[in-house]
Image 1 (cartoon, rainbow, N blue to C red):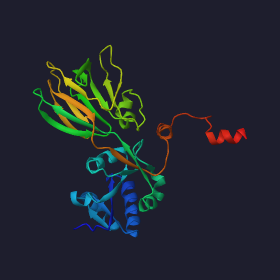
Image 2 (cartoon, helix red, strand yellow; image 1 turned 45 degrees about the vertical axis):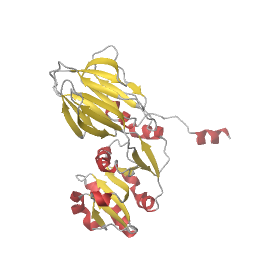
Image 3 (tube, rainbow, N blue to C red; image 1 turned 60 degrees about the vertical axis):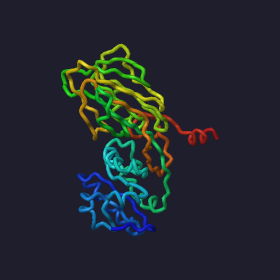
Image 4 (cartoon, rainbow, N blue to C red; image 1 turned 30 degrees about the vertical axis):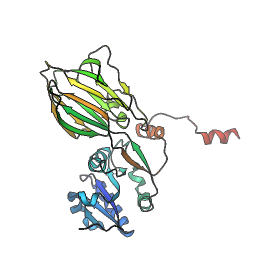
Length: 307
């Protein structure tokens, strides 16, 4: 089916295994139809939701005309939808139906206002850094390439053995580690896997590469924050019998062996997140982790008592 130039198209992505996601997406599609906006869905979701309103199958042709991707699910659903949205620079707006969702803009109970915001295009777009990663064999020939929104993780496959790695920054050797693995994270990913590995939380408007060793046996094995124009590489040292695996955002992977090098640098595409509110990141951090701030009084309240 051809795409009419004057029509508006919004892509709907969802966690198909959750009834709550199906229900929320169905209501959203109905609202979009009332305003003359066509929703694009992947084939497996189209079959389940085609009766909800005006829908088309999401294809390379139709997807290029999408003005926004609305995702019903947790951060995992947003990361999966980003695999096709990121190269097209299409902004994404998440409705969190998961647990701790840092990428999502709305919680499920806030979804009622979503239709009006999308119809009126009343949202801003926040850009986040991504990682481009390349795996080369022992001869320096590229064998695999991918991107990451959260992190690139190099991890051992055998539980009982560590891997020996050499970490380099801008072609200069930094340190050799016997380790369970190494994380190369974006600031966005600093609240994901890297957070669980005791890495620092970075504000998402920073451009930087976070390097976090996983249970490294070395004197110098602290997390490192590397500048955005630097390149970090992790070489699996010869003599390792233990195989390893590279994961990007926990969803795309390739096996690696001794002599291979994993290189990470800032990606050419930016993750574009649609934001309805101007909620500061510190407020998101407090809310998502339920941080104890009892007794704190905001500026407005302090000014009121001062009067």
